[in-house]
Length: 87
Ligand SMILES: [Zn+2]
Image (tube, rainbow, N blue to C red):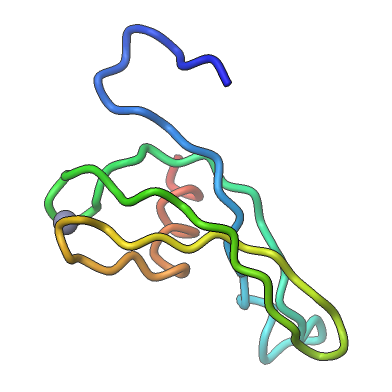
């Protein structure tokens, strides 16, 4: 995949679980594709390499990405969803 030049911080497209429909009529996990600046929100250090994670829920299979940041800060899915909504 080509990397855009002129940016110091790489971006990655990852798939995360969006449970914001829970508690409403759409009580179902949704997989969202997000393109994020690949830096930790807490310390701006590089995030870890995403790994595909497949799981079973409510009779369906879902695939999302999970990553561990080398800095030790944990990215919650709700945080990265908020990050992408802010643009
Ligand atoms: Zn960090």
